[in-house]
Image 1 (cartoon, rainbow, N blue to C red):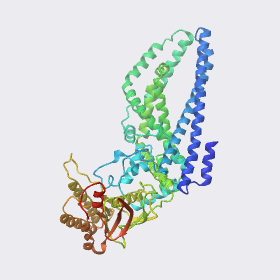
Image 2 (cartoon, rainbow, N blue to C red):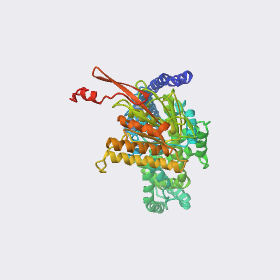
Image 3 (tube, rainbow, N blue to C red):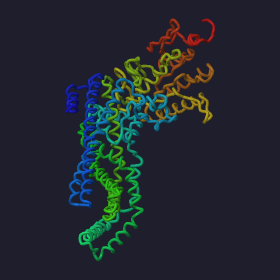
Image 4 (spheres, rainbow, N blue to C red):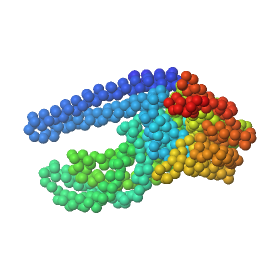
Length: 619
């Protein structure tokens, strides 16, 4: 009742209107789920004692009778099985409630900005050669992926990562936005997606499952499907008659020999099938529950409707088919019970079940990859919906076809707590400048501003809300030089690594110039060409920026070298200077992180050196 009351209260109060409302809803549900865990723990202890008592009773009967008394043991045996089944259900419900507790605990940590280190970091998607992933903190501890990610399948994680790593067409982004809006208020759905599997880290290995489903079948001949059940039935009947009449039937020996020969003939194929499906059993259970939830959830938007139609377009109900396969895998697992081994051998259970699994793969295996892709896309959309629900003040940006342009009011960084983030506006392209040259002293906020712009563009084109009061943009392909490093292994200096990345960004811009269907480039160049002398730096920077603008790109360039601000004059109205200021008072450096027009007029380098005890003379 406590859980139902909490859920009803959340729906009645509409707790998604503000972050405080979301937090209140999460706390109420957390308390309710914790209560469910405690209740199931008490029931678990009671049932454990019941099982012990029934087993002790059976042992007592055996001791009293002095011999196995089958009629007397049937009653405690059936009671033990019934209690064991009930016990398993209670443990399963307890574990699901415990995972729901984790879901809301992690949600509250995201809301109070203590989430870094609590989620999936997506490290396997990192690539130092990607034009912006490392620069914008997309993967790793405290990354955008960790903030967003909730998928339980590798397909879901890969889908979400792919959306962050490449821009989508505006039409695709609009479909994602509609789907995210539709899923945003569905807290029960997001909780349901999270509690699948035996623990919160269990993830379906999509590649292995796809390979298994599509691997060649070995046991789909038609005649064994009909002959083996008859053989098992005849052998079982003869064994039963032997037990009843205490005399072996005439043909029992022949039947046992034939059955042993069949088992020996198929032994390697059965072992191969059973080993593979047993490794996939846990993943199949998660996938079954995930597909069943997607099938049940009503859809109104175009994208979610399309996904639902695709799931059943083959004529199969995916969750039902996966459930059938899970039951077959469970039957194979019963062979590991030493008390059931003789019965399994008598029924040719392993051989017949392995054949049924191979027939399943022949019928449904080719559909599994698409089922996994649909499940992955749904999970990725649900992950963005969770982010949208926990940031109700963040708007969905307007994505246009014609560009390039990028406009935003009160834009701030989504990985910086809102209480500390300082918002600023930006206007690039359209009727504004194509390039902003950002000057300012060390630690004034130049690099953070580039990351703020870039990461919000990534969020926008993934289909998520952005951290701004308003934002509109065209399709843009980002390229950045914020985290360029030298490489001892590759024998590359930082300067060489930077100009290599710059050449890649220019190549991206040329692809757009040659093919307007490719998105224009948004370049984010931090302390451009800092590894060379002032003359070469100015000449090179002006040529690179001019070339990018001529190729239809827009972007930002930071510098603390005021000589470089003269680049703007050479670009005319296509460029503008903006800056961040600082002040040094009483030995303490102060920043307000507000972006202003024009060139910075202050410098803090000498003051900083003096503040740490370096003797650099007087100003």
